Amino acid sequence: MKNRKFIKKAIKYFVSIILFILSVIPFWILAVNATRSTEQIQQGFSMIPSHFISFNYEVLTGRGFGFYRGFANSMFISTSFTLVVLYFSAMTAYALVVYEFKGKKVLFSIIAFVLMVPAQLSLIGFYKMMLNAGLTDSYIPLILPGLASPATVFFMRQYLLSSFPITLVQAARIDGATELSIFHKIGLPLMKPGLATMGIFTFVGSWNNLIVPLMLISTEDKYTLPMLVQLLKADIYRTEYGSIYLGVAMTILPLVLVYAAFSKFIIAGVALGGVKE
Amino acid sequence: MELTKSKKKRKGGIANYSKYGQMFAIPFIIGFLLFQLYPIIYTITLSFTDLAGWETELNFVGFKNYIHILHNDHFLRALKNTWIIWGMNFIPQLLVALILAKWFTDNAVKIKGEGMFKAIFYLPNIITAASLAILFNSLFGFPHGPINQILIHFDVLQEPFEFFRSKPGTRIIVAFIQFWRWYGSTFIILCAGIMGINPSLFEAAKIDGASDWKIFTNITLPLLKPITLYILITSLVGGMQMFDIPFLLTGGGPDYAVETGMIYVYNQAFTGNRNFFMSATASVVLLLIIMVFSALIYYVMNKDKRKVSR
Figure 1: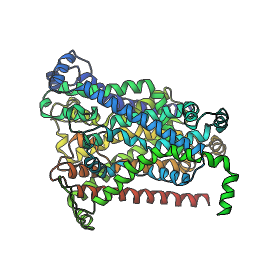
Figure 2: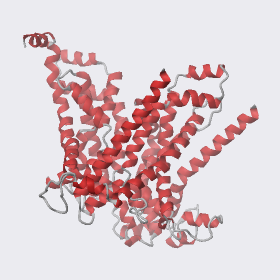
Figure 3: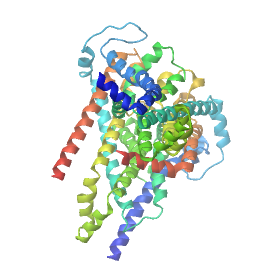
Figure 4: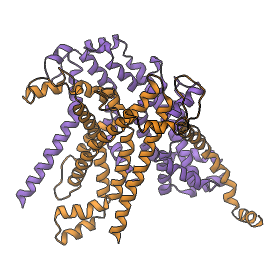
């Protein structure tokens, strides 16, 4: 009996460690090769870093890989988009929970339905519409659609229903506060934990988005980081393996750092996503 | 008329505030109409026209595009690729995630460092798909990519293999990347599902002498059905729109082996003649496929549920 338990345990650890290595090793090779010269990379495989990182960096940036510009662009877009999503989703969810109004049921049905509609499949209409409006090559179509984020509204509504004390709103009304200031001073602060969870997923989703900016943005100065990555496949880097690895590593590093700081929080959020249904 | 008026008066307090509810929802409604409803309707409209290139005038052509696209080998091949790659990724993904979830929630044989394993298994999911595509393009490179070097070093291969010239090879790599990115997420969701099951059910079964395997197949799996349904549908919806990885890995090649439905949509609209009408038609077909299969999965799973409860 004891023996069987030991074997079971050994198998579990063995498989878990294999998967652990599988998850980490591509990033390890990436980090190591970012520090090796192209000759070293061609000669053979190694798990030990070398000292060509600054050389690779020179080659990378010397051929037009505008990492900092791309980083700043992505940062601006993702931050603005996330703020728009959080503020207006909180507002809509607050309206759905605190007020009774005509059309409330219809609104909620729409939100629940749109949750299931895959957004990418209306991209052609979205693109043509932006083309007609003269908004291609602008960040507006990347930020403003955050006004309507059904998933965030849905989540925040559940969050409010389970934890929001309506009596606080009534008390504030007696004190003569306006409805908007009640939302700002009581609603938003109480929603903070829920907003933080949705905020990080919204931010990462926007940061990683490739197809929408790829369709809309044409000026290289306005490229987001995921768009910039595709330049590494261009001919100018063809034989500069070290620089390609370094370029990819630089685009991955910010996310790895964010994940290192918030992984517990993110995993709790992922688990919540499934239980919700 | 009279009645509703008096009703409103009695409900006075609420009626006074109802306009704020509407006001607070207005930005959402505008955003929804402008950026979600209109683009969908516009996409559907375009699928009935002949709009292409930089033309601004469009002519309605009825169902011509639909008839054309359903006989278009190029599009049908893209659909087939999408399903093959999704299946090759989803089946192992669900199996591995289920096994892991069973192991990690088993209190009899605890695994140390559970949180760390979870965090590492989920890591690939958060990394930009575009970057991962370029990374795997380099890892499987020919002839000096690390994978080739390792395989030759361990005598698995005699000479470097050109993965991205092989159709099955490239498909397996794309499916593997999808698997690798998503099994952690599925695993965490399933864990949460298993932990949400009432523990007294497991205890009762154990007292009755049920084996581990019996408990898993007769209690855990049936109770996980709603969550598995959620995973299946979200994975299908995502899988049918697969774009980033195959697009940046090989651009859809070799010989269109990993050209997915979404790559077809993109290429029709943004390369060559800019055939927006074909692109829109393909989008609508993909949308219909997703809707039909989601409904089907939902129906099949719920039909089973009714039987069980009886």
